[in-house]
Image 1: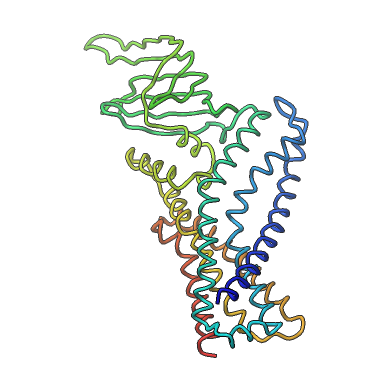
Image 2 (image 1 turned 45 degrees about the vertical axis):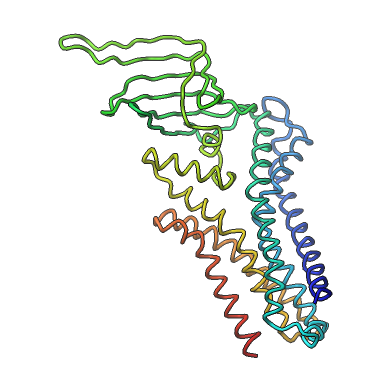
Length: 367
């Protein structure tokens, strides 16, 4: 059985790598075409090498999204080719029964599951952050829309609404505004700073302008006290990762960072539906590699005519694309309809799991 496992693992790994490289080359080409109009423009000229590095930094994210599809297509190709050449028939007569074949492929799928998790949770977020900072060097900043990002935090006696206009190429904040309210919801102060940086459990505001609205005594007019502080320290639990996710997409965060950000939103009575769905997608998406290898196993029990393998591989491509689209559609619909986040994220995998088990039962066990 070691020889059989080595044969299947080697063939599937080679096929998956070949399919993944092909998809990544295609996405790299499309991303580079999108960057071509920006070459030579910006605060500092955007060079060709910088464009190539930025496009290259997006490769891990594409690999994370495409790996389950590549696993499906590569495994279908290997299983169908073994069936067409009657090699799989020989393997069956050598003792490779349906359940043993399933366990063999599940072990391989577990390897791809771990690889997908590591890429999506560690490599891709770091590469995306590096690429965004690289691109910000010629754009001058990282921002979202015209108003920037808004965050909220409750402290012991006050609540704060924070607006960050953008992030600089060095990761510092620009155009920061902090609105402080008391326990009754009345505005207490407004602090503005053109620049700010992150410190241990605090922000360091540079050239801050602070306006305090003191509650007037009976019979007196309200007063506004305005002061200029060259360097101001504001204690807060809003971290750099939280600001980054508010300015960037939540799918570019790691699972731990998403979990911490969701806790922060709930603690400040803010909606976290979108981020909870993305968190559970991060949890369930790598497991789709197990579903894909089970879905590919029945192709080894089909009978092929000459040249018939092409159609089945094309069918595998369509199944993989449909899974990718369904995964995105469920995320958007679940966010709009307020579905349970874990169910929204798990639904595509559950549907394809039932499909793969039905195909395995019909083509493998009953025929």
